[in-house]
Each structure stands twice: as C-alpha cells, then as structure tokens.
Length: 272
Ligand SMILES: [Zn+2]
Ligand SMILES: [Zn+2]
Image (cartoon, rainbow, N blue to C red; front, side):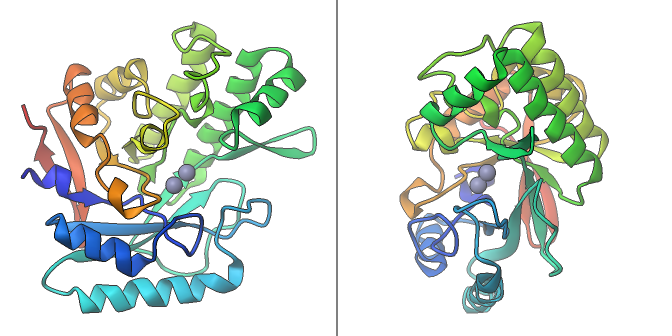
C-alpha cells in the first residue's frame, strides 16, 4: 500500500486526551505496516484540560523515546508535540511541532473553538456576528504561524468543527474565506506544511477533512504542501478516511502529499 496511507504524525495518547497508550498505538501502527508514527501530545497549557500536565511531559518524552528504540528497524517513531498557540513553547527539543489554534483571546478570556457545539454557540452569541468570531480565530492563526517554529499548521479551519451539525456561518462567504485564506497564506509563507486532518470525521463531527475544499484549492494555488493525518485519539482510527481525504486533495488539484519520516518530509504521489 502507498506510503501515504502508512503514516500518521498527529497522534494523541493517554498522556493527553487519547484513549490508548503510546505502546498500543505503536503496536497498531506496526500491524498496519506503517513506515512512520509520530506522537504529538498536546503540549502543556494551563487553560486546557485536554493538554498534557507540565509534570507529565518528561514521562511522555521518555516513553516515546523508549518505543523508538524498541521499534528500531521495524517502524520509525517520531517525538512530536502539538503546540497550542496561546501556551509557552516547550523548552525541550522535538522532532517536529504542529502549530494549532484551539483557543483565541477575547475580552480577557480564552475562547475554545472545538469544545462543543453548545459552547461554540454561546461564543457566537457573545460576538453577535459569526464572521467576526471566525475573523478573530483566523487572526490568531496568522499571528501564531508568523512566530511559530512548527513545521506543520494543524487543522487550519478548526473554527468550523461544528458548522456541519449546526450551521452558523457560510464557509463560502468572503467574510469567512478572506481571513481563512490570509491565515493559510501566512503558514505557506513561513514554509509550514498544511495538515489535512480527518480527526473530526473519525469522531462524527464532519463529513470532510480540515481544511475545506475552497481553502485546499487556494493552498494548492499558492504552492503549499500538504500532509495527511487523522489527529488520532484511538488506535483503530490511525488512518481514518485517508482514502476520502486523498481523493479530495486530487479534486483540489494536488498530485502529491508529504509523509514525515525520521529523515524529514518525503514527497509521495497521491494514489489515483
Ligand atoms: Zn488540535
Ligand atoms: Zn490533535
């Protein structure tokens, strides 16, 4: 099977909000003939209950590095971190970082965009104008990408997580697309790879990956690169909906995507 379908570098475990141990995920990845598995625990963030506790980070690192040694020659294991844009950067070295915006600041609060449809609705009511809400989210993305050392821009349009189940704004509206495309352009200008993330599909929130097709088309036009991940929170979902995501990428003009391995990004043709 194509290398593209045998890798995932956006993976959560019991060290943050995932269901399985890193060992169980590695075992599942090996059984699926993976070439690389990257762990990307949520980096410590005091305002985020899904994030790793500060004191757990050393244990997380040790466990992933233990697995890397144990699987040497059979499966490449990478030590990564998903950084939330409002948290401090980790003092530790990682193989790679994913830059994500789960929260943005507003009137002295940090608003979470992906907690629940009800909470998102309350945020939208607070804003009054849903496009102002989206604009604030994408402005935080642009700010984050601009200063980020991360290699990958995570789930670019996470703000639309609940918009299929409970539509609140039109994702084709220029008031939405304008700021979204600015954020995408910012990530691409920084040389970041845009993540195509099927995590919300695996958990029943969306029928399409992040980012949506209009954004992906622009990413392609701007010469951006993409990487496929499942934002995996349990081992059986390691390659959730990869086939659909690859088909969408082709539809949006892409011929290839990247796979991250120990020696860096590999370019792999998308299957026909
Ligand atoms: Zn995330
Ligand atoms: Zn994640």
